[in-house]
Length: 473
Image 1: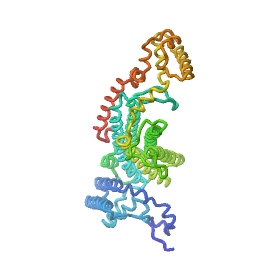
Image 2 (image 1 turned 45 degrees about the vertical axis):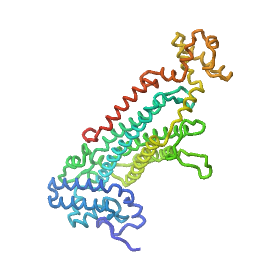
Image 3 (image 1 turned 90 degrees about the vertical axis):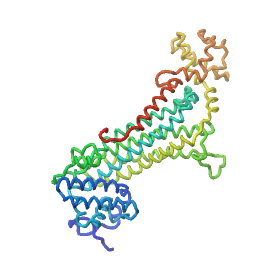
Image 4 (image 1 turned 90 degrees about the horizontal axis):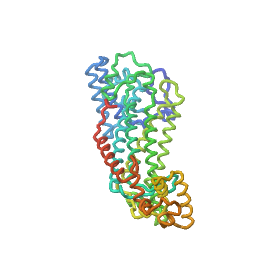
């Protein structure tokens, strides 16, 4: 076996075993950080010039050389392999080939420990911004779907049992609120992503007269880490992001589950359009809800990455440990999963789903979800609610035995239950009135839903006009 000279110092007498080199290498996945690595390195080079550690001419060569590496990568001319070990060594090696010995000065007053922390934060900061934009698009589609459906009724459920009828728009706006929290939560996570570890060195800082506030400002960070040990070993920000990503997936998965149920023959509340559904290989009559099923399935991946990173971090002593190399695959896959699922669900809602309003209208007429309104009716007539509740329970029991719905009872039968019942009971228990009457703030009453739509549109416009500014976080 021919040994290849490695990249380490004279402390080592032989190269890594080829299998260990492959096992040790991260270039296969951290190449995704290359442009962030170049940007961070350019800021570091500027700081070295500013503090007099290198000359202005050397700084210019480094910055231009790094830009050439960026250009070569974008053009597909720079494709480092396992021998480069990681993206940081790959960039530095190519830079040295371009600029000569001056390229070897780039790593002055810097370690891969603070370098990878900087790159990861730059990457995640960018991805958070993109995901927040996607959430706003998702909310916009929810509003467009809700606006014409304020007075479309849909059965509401608790324990997956018919509970009370709802405005369909009210149901959709619940997911708008979830997405709004997701958007806000990511903005809060951004605050802790947006801190610079650059200049922390391997763990203890550096003897060189660096200016960490300058590099933080150059890279758009709000501040540098106050403690060098914490700067290189902190992954709280990554865990927080994965927790926020997990909640996004929870919300998408809950909506997915409902769409899957609604599209079944048993419910029949929605039809999936051909552009967002597939068929069976042997059953020609089937139309499968692949998009929501995949979203529901992929949710577990993000949950798993969150758990993996929590377990990875729980036993690590300060400061950097190679275990931390495994944070990036978890982050990269979670980012891609969340972005893909948000895109797919947004398209599904926008152009792949159609509510069957006639079926929905029929559904709210065929159950006892107006029973609470009968109890409320009696309570409004002065009957104690708990007494009214028990009376209505008996009515439902006898009606079920007789094969009747509440709307089928005669006025004589109503008054035999309690003399407070009058002819207006029939109006009070119509599904439309049942929904309209729930006009408390945040309720499903049509007027409340219209007001909620106006408020949601205003909130969305405000969020859409928001431009990320690091000083705001």
